[in-house]
Each structure stands twice: as structure tokens, then as C-alpha cells.
Image (cartoon, rainbow, N blue to C red):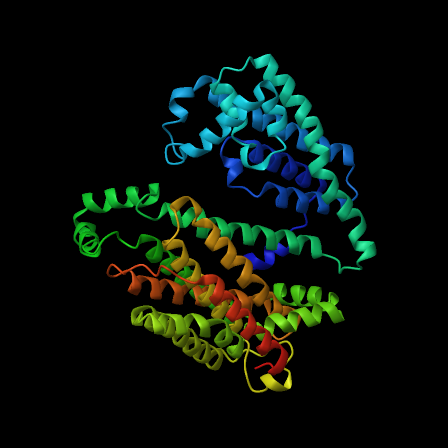
Length: 465
């Protein structure tokens, strides 16, 4: 059974859900790690599944309580026993502002900072560490840790649990949707981590870059290629890794898709889920996003920015953007013709076209992925992850709209996303071959409004293509 289908066949048991709640609560409360983990989303999703399975609420709150107490306790011990070493280790060595934020919070609220800090997102994983470094008496910390966890656990568990107890009856959702939503949430979080934190690690300031650079310079076989690539500046390691990972994944995924005589089991399952969600509002929203992501929609979105680049005589940027869109369009045409995979449903305007890979998805990934990469290059290092989160938030609904309108299988979307990442990586590698002048200043509010006006006109007056 393919891995993707096997994941969908896994139904979390009550014991596994309790363990998940405990682990998520622990990790979210753990020093510094909690800053990188979207614990609220994960706990809400897991608690919702537990509520649907009628797991006793007391057990669920108890698991969250234990995890939170252990996580804060470990953080406190790290600060209490290893005060000097903690500040010299990554990530605090590169982000001293995190420690400064926690120290100011601790100085302001004193012993109450541990109690209050558990409910304040930006400082929650920092305060126990700071409390240990400031030598807060252990018995005082234990009291604050236990009492705050006793209030925190039900506050975070109850919304998801009640949602899981009620949504099946009130919204009439198809069976199995909880597992699909949890898997989707895990995929989204993994992608966001890869393209924010992971990409930072592959830049000159990241540990991965320094480790690979040191290895390459010591090995005769790699020394000359590494030095040759670094002549014009930093080696574009992040783009190289993206190309290798995306191209390898696309090859493996495509072999799996063409090896099946028809849709995968996972495709059929997800198609049934989205068919059960069909309603006038959902279908209308899906059609809007489908129009935004088609050829006319992409042109409407990109036209103001292209005009700005043209007026600014940034021919290099225009060539790279044009090459990326032309390349992904050509690869989609070749792929659809080569594999000839039938669509779940073929409306009149798509008659004669095929399904794999999804052109909407690949084009959206190229558009928002390249935009995020160019914007991130102009941002401070500690804020670059925001560009990739925004790109993911914009590309995801465009891709899912193809499932809502019923013209693609889920595996088509995955193939399209991987194809888009390959094109992004190739474009960025060519762009990074030599130093480029900054794209600043950019009148992005004016250009964004112009794009929204053109997109509204496209959605309102032109048919889908």
C-alpha cells in the first residue's frame, strides 16, 4: 500500500490521542521549541478528534495538564542549571531578542510572570527558562507551574473538544473528515516549517549552511565546485536543496500515480469527502478561487507588477518571471499530454483536457513561491518566515478549490505543487548566479489594490478557462 494511502487508513485510537495531547502540550511549553510549533492548531485538531470519539474530557484535560507541567519544568531546569551555556547555544545565540523579551516580562511581573506568561503566546516558551536563569526559588516555580497549568489545560482543550462533539451533528460533515483535516494540518505545518525555518538554516547564517560549507572545503571532490559556485557570493544552498528534494519527490510521486490504473484509494476517499461538503456557498467560493487561479486570473494579478517592473526597466526580473510562467505552462502541457489521466468530472470548458498535474496548483506555487522568495530577500532575517507563511496561505485555497469544483484528484494537486517547486528552484538558481540590485522602493499598496481590482473584474465578467 502506498504511504499516502496508508496514512489515511490510520485511525487514531483513544490512547494515541491522549498521548498526542500530552506530547503537543509538552512541546509547546518547552523552552524555545514552542515558538516554532503551532500548538494551538494542533491541540484544537487533536481535541476535536477526541471529542468526536467521546473520550472522557477529564482524561484529555489531565494529559494536557501533565504535558504542560513537564514542559515548563524542563525549561526551568535548563535555565536553572545551565544558565551560561543556554545563551551561547542556538537559537538564543542568533536570537538574543527572545531572551530580552522574556527578561523584560519577568522583571515587570516578578513571580507572577510564570503564571501569567503561560497564557501570553510570544513569551510562553521563554518565561520558564528565564525564571530558572534568574534563580527563582524552585518551590515558587512549582506552585506557579501547577496552578497555571490547571487553568491552561481546560482553556485550550475545551474549544476543540466541544467542536468535535457537535460538528458532526450540526454541520452534517462526512465521516472521516477529522482524520483528513488533521493530516492536512500536519502537511501545512510541515511545509511552513520547511520554507521558513528550514530555508533559513540553508542560508549563510544557518547552521546547515556552515556545516555543509565546512564539509565541502575539506573534501577535494567538493572543494572546487563549492568555490566555483561561491565566486559571486553565497552558494545558493537553499535553492539547490529545494531543487533536489522537489525533483526527487516529483519523480517518485509521478511513478506512483502512473503505476495505478486510475485514481489512488486516497484520491477516491478525499473526492467523497469534498462531494459531501458540496453546497451553494462552498461551491461558489470554490469557483471564485478557481477563477483567480486560472490563466486570466494570473494575468490579472501579475499585470500591475509587470508594468511596474517594465517602467523601472528591471528587465532581469521580468525575464525570470516570464520564464518561470512559460516554463510551468509548457511542463503542464507536456505532462497532461504524456500521462493522459482522466479528470473526476470534466465540465464543458475543460473538455479534451487531462488531470495530472494540476496546472492551477503549479502556477499558484510559482506565483506565490517566487513572490515570497523575492520579498523575503528584502526583509530582515528574523521576519522572512512571514513571507513563506503568507505564500502558503494564498496558494493552498487555490489548490483546494480544484477539489471543491471536482475537476482534479488530490494526487494531481500534489504533483502540481511539486512541479511548481521545481520551477521555483530553477528560477531562483538562475537569479542567484550574480548579485542583483534591490527591488526597493516598491509601491506595494498601490500595486496590491490594482491587482485586487483586476481580479474582481476577472471573477465578475469573464468565464472560467
